[in-house]
Amino acid sequence: MGTIHDFFTSQLLEWYKPTQRPLPWKSEKNPYYIWLSEIILQQTRVEQGRAYYEKFKKNYPTVQDLANAGEDQVLKNWQGLGYYSRARNLHQAAKYIVSDLGGKFPATHEDILKLKGVGEYTAAAIASFAYDLPFAVLDGNVFRVLSRFFGIKTPIDTGEGKKEFKKLAQKLLPPLEAARYNQAIMDFGATICMPKKPKCVSCPFRSECSAFINKNITFLPIKAKKTFKKERFFHYLRLNIGDFVYLHKRSEKDIWQHLYEFPLYEADRILDVETVKNKAFDGLLEGVNIVIKRQSKVYKQVLSHQKISAIFMEFELLDALVDRNNNWIQIKKERLKEYAFPKIIDLYLNDNSLYLNLF
Ligand code: SF4
Image (cartoon, rainbow, N blue to C red; front, side, top):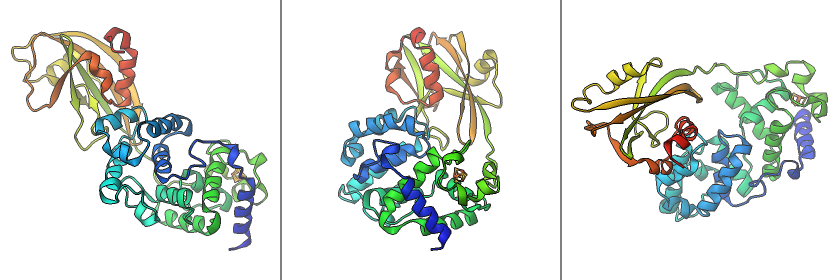
């Protein structure tokens, strides 16, 4: 290990005080709880993730409890966190641990990596935090800190970049203090070397930091690709028939798989209610009396690769629609709160809870 590497590791460990950033999963040694926290935090801010971590621990205290739960219930508990494939993978992996591993959480890096939804980063985090195995974590925080301190300009989203950073991160990790070191570098990235306005003034690395010395902090780390966000326009049809409404469970290979929604009409822009009525019910309306009630404002939700605009149009049906392979289900309005919806529908339901008599 060269001097600059030694400097980095020793300064980081010296800087780290576990109590600086107390988090409920920090001193945890139970691999199941660590796994829960890591999956929840994959695409979620710490402040938001904390409540969900506590909720999952309370509702599913053991991996057996999680495996035995119904998928709809797990998704309902996950509601509001987004990226629902994480919850489905969590649930399936819990079932696998119970059925194939006798309920015992895997204890090697290789076996942890076999769990559905667990990638390199999460496997290294669980292996080091639960078992003190010498695997360096590499997440957004680590990429940022290393690229700035060592002045690395290789794009972090390329195969070459990932290889280079992985090698460096592993080289910096003190094998006997894996958990402490991994926690330290993530805390450092989250509280000192932040994406915007890093606290260089109070940084212990300042004298040796390449980005600070060369004044290129804001350019690092470098990404090769700009993420392109596809725009989509959803028209949700709230079809009231007496005390009932129609729902549909998303089963297509698309966003929000296995969540519920109102019958959907998608177009390349937001359309007016008459047009939607004519197009969306094409062929379904013969003999059905339908009254347009009202429409909502346009709601927006930004996902990692898509921007969704959704408008909710309400119709009163005087006769039941014939379901022609649409797989719609009819439920009582008051039971809406039992279903797991995407965030954009939840926003609409909350805005309209009084009017809709929901909660
Ligand atoms: S000096 Fe600034 S850019 Fe360099 S490691 Fe410290 S906080 Fe990050």
